[in-house]
Image 1 (cartoon, rainbow, N blue to C red):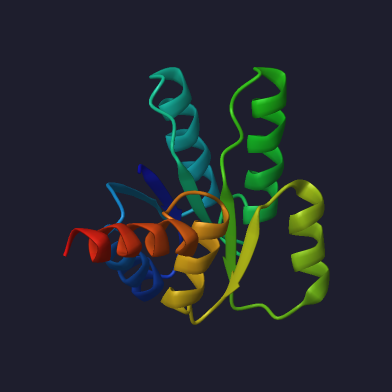
Image 2 (cartoon, helix red, strand yellow; image 1 turned 30 degrees about the horizontal axis):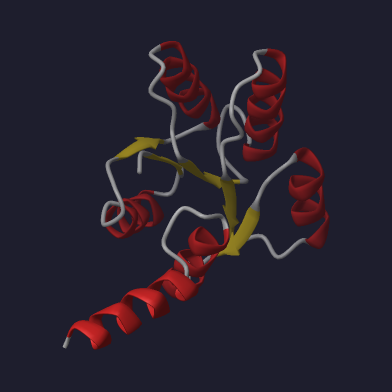
Amino acid sequence: MKILIAEDDRLSRVFMEKFMSTFGPCDVAVDGMETLDLYMDSVKKKQPYDLLCLDIMMPKVDGLKVLKVIRAVEKQHDLPHLPIIMMTAIADVEYVDQAFELGCDAYASKPVDTAKVEEVMKNLGLLPGTEEQAEKAGEEDEKA
């Protein structure tokens, strides 16, 4: 799984990159403009990201505008839907509602709870779900 992490706070960025790198290679952007550049570059190279972890409050272009641009590009060029998890320390329901209206797939508040992020990734079909894990465990029990 190829992941793009958009986070301007250095500590949060380092934490997210370390955590998310267990699921696949990660690219990191420090502001909204760099996020859009990396996204567009991946589209041009036909090597799209499988997941974007997107901070709402970022310099140059905020996360909500990044989300809006990505969804518009997907629609305009008939591209596959990029799962986007919005991440923010802001507890403002208005920002969260706006993010979902613009097409985000999930929301995670900071500090990030890694177990919840994994659960969201399972729900988005990016990781094997609990049913698949249970089936595998059952198969392994039968083999034993």
